[in-house]
Image 1: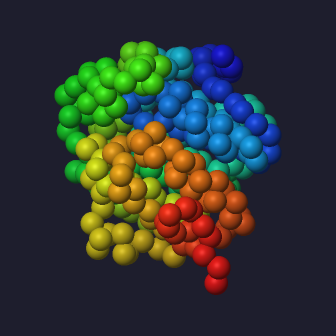
Image 2: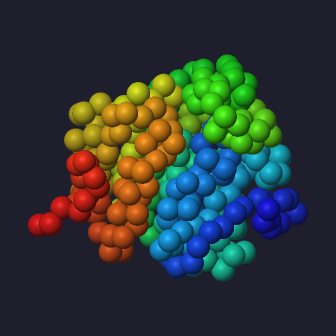
Image 3: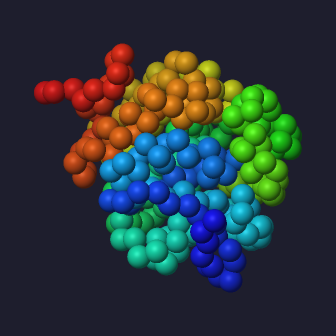
Length: 262
């Protein structure tokens, strides 16, 4: 286990590979651990980091740090401590919101953003996130297959207040405006069968700016990186391979991921 201290608190992280840096940010349910397959796929060409946000996994539990702004400040502080000048952010659910807050307030730190299961409005989030303990949420979303047991063990470490406070924060934010004002190349990914975050309407998706693009995984729920890992990881690597500043609109879903040749 790797760790640093920020504000006299423990921040747990893991890292694989060499190359340009990217950082995986986890959801309300779980920790860094479910990103392992994606980290392994990315680490062939990149230096892949993943960390536990405040209140999750093996990072310190302190409710004063559970707002989205404080979670984004954690990423800023982590980058400074690790000597990282700029990186790609790969966020999921809560991590997607944190990624957009950081990219919107400090775009010089971020090269590009890939967000999975990001709610474009607070009403798009299933209220069950508030009413059920984290372990029940794991059973609801991932079942009880043996492969998920490490995720279950990590989820048991979560502070429920970290979920509640972040959801309260989401309700205060104009999430659509947050996304639209974020100035960097952005790829949105949704699972068609996601029970946690509603897939945006076609009207909303058709209004996204030229710097952004969306992909919907028809065979996935809230965790496309686990439901369809080969497709997700291929998409991730193709997105990361785009030249800096280039829109991901060139990416499309076929039998396999391919870049469209103009």
